[in-house]
Length: 129
Ligand SMILES: [Zn+2]
Image 1 (cartoon, rainbow, N blue to C red):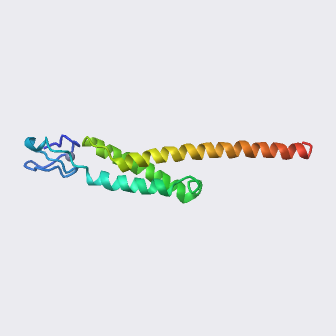
Image 2: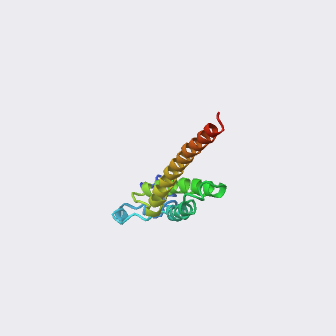
Image 3: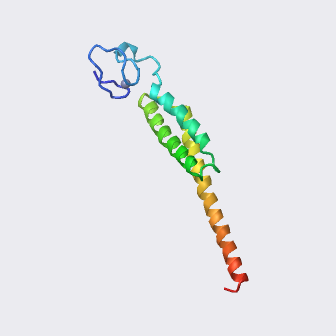
């Protein structure tokens, strides 16, 4: 039996999908879909890591790892929740935070590069180069 929510194969006679916990039997379909456990856990994980990766720490090694973990887990959690017609709020928040962090870091690096370039140019002009 194929789950209509997530497409997972389930043994015949099963009433609940082993993958997403939604009911497989027709009369239960009206019930509110259940958020898959994996989506719940990954959503929270992504939110925690997105907060760990706030700009400032994002420029150092663990920050980058945290940011990557946040981005990847939030995308997976979002997909898993979407498969059953739900929205994972923590994953959505984590995804938005990750994108904002990326923008902040990119803009920050650009500003530093421009400011740094200006500083080097000033120093070079002072020594007459
Ligand atoms: Zn399923």
